[in-house]
Amino acid sequence: MPSEGINLICGRNGEGKTNLAESLWLLTGCQSFRTKRLRELICHGENSARIDGEIFAQERRQTIGIDIAAKRQGQLNGISLPTIHALLGTFPAVFFSPDTLALVREGGGHRRRFFDIAISLQKPAYAAALSKYCKALAQRNALLRSGGADLASLEPWDFQLARTGAKLIYERSRYAENLSELCGEIYEKLSGGGEKLTLKYTPCVANEECIEENLLALLQRAFPQDSRWLYTTVGVHKEDIALCLDGREARVFGSRGQLRCCALSLKISEATLLRRALNEAPVVILDDVMSELDTVRQRALLDYLRDWQVFITCCEVSNIFADSAAAVFSLRGGKIL
Image 1 (cartoon, one colour):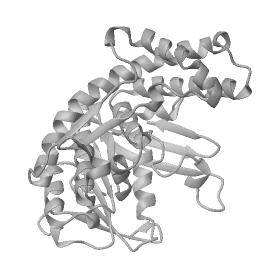
Image 2 (cartoon, rainbow, N blue to C red; image 1 turned 45 degrees about the horizontal axis):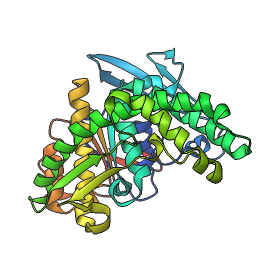
Image 3 (cartoon, rainbow, N blue to C red; image 1 turned 45 degrees about the vertical axis):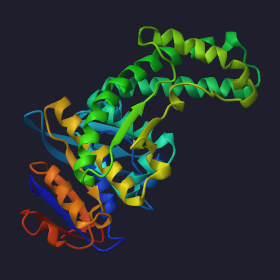
């Protein structure tokens, strides 16, 4: 049985540590952090996969099951769920890996996805609105690609994008306000106060009292441009979140160490906000993260995660865990020994 504190999953490369971390993450009801192709989640030569977990959440023991075949099917306490997203909020977790650096280093799509997952874990209704937005966007783009689109034929999808997009903007704005203050404080502690981290979310439309109307007008104004490019060039799906160090864009001017601190600050803030929203600490999954950090940042990270349940994958046990009373598990050939 895993410890309620720190759990170290140790094994050589290729033994299945990341697969175990991914299985824990999938129990949240979110997409895989590696791929959107379900086939890649199934063992080679097999037609399906299943993940089972027993958790203590919402003040009681519960069971979670996920079947992966042509689609994902979730069960909660033995009852089949209408969609996998119905699991959101049942098993809260936060995932961090070296790839999380892409949050700061790469384009806006990574930061939008971070926001979408973080808010969905707090508010499953956000995930439902996002799903409707993406489906309407796909339909609008298909119509544009057909070459026969005009304002009248696009109108139903414009209304749907405006209606659901307004909900997404509202929640992103609120989340950004809370996240900005917290991640700035955490970055200062992790970095030793060398520079100040700020986060700014700028919605694609202004005036909160008329978000839906402004979104609709934005889509209609962009019709000539969309017709030329054959896809929807404006909207919620094109937004970005700016991360700056002392007023300069982190992904352009930040060193690798600074980028790592930015990403850590964002993920610790995500976990903290999730804990506040649910009044329950999420499980923290760190996949091969400690080797990427120096000793000072390792200690700072473990200090923040004190009293949380944490799963850490690593190749060998570091001296940093000597006084942590961590539970150690060995992984060989995909099996815990």
